[in-house]
Length: 373
Image (cartoon, rainbow, N blue to C red; front, side, top):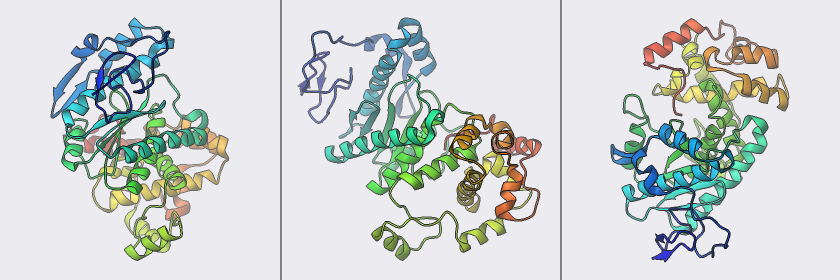
């Protein structure tokens, strides 16, 4: 066991940082360095064990931090609470799970140290790239580090997610940005390529979690940045042979090609397009789910041709789930979403309709139009 020079806590030798105060192990404390802002016993009552994992009452914790500390100390306090929470989750998962962190990101996983360090560094670099791409659109508050939890066991992953799903069920996924409470990311470990793509996609969701975006636009932004930043990943409809060849030459497939376009033309109509604008189609199994992600990326690309980087950012900032972003598109880009969709899908009444969208939300049992994605 190693001992933290800052707070005296005993730490596992595999850990690179103290799981209590977050200071890097093996680095002597400067005389003026404070021990910790938060006594772990003071917030112990804000955690409970539910459905296999410790859960935090983030409203209680938030009020406690904001009432006790100066605003300049909030980020440090949130970082300490996040590490205290991850420490409990580490014990819940057991085995070789360990916590490491950089200035921007905290990672809980049981990956080999070298792999964990690569993922942590990659996430930190990606976060900086996303902020550079989105500019003032990206959240830059003082709520603490980005938190990424990597599950090596799929059962653990889906059990963890079930708590955050309204009906307890969770569709198959390669990663989720969980917006309830302390926004954080959970991903199942498969391989480095999948993890890299999931980190880019979900960190993008994390960076815009403060905005009331329609789900299609939220996913479009994440898909677009994933395609731009992450290593090439197999695209919808690619064969094994094509995927191997693409990887060998670092080729990225186009957003759309003939076979995929034909699937879109056959599937979408003036009725079910409302489920796309409402966001519910993203949670339906089969083609509805697959084609929704693809259509979202196509529409954002078409909208980007109507404006520049500044106007697209303004559109993202103003877009609201209540009307699928229609008002923002008209105001910032001079574009009607129905017209934009028709550019790709052909003639028809593709415009978002609020009444139809509300009907989709009610049918899905949603109290609001967005959910974790």
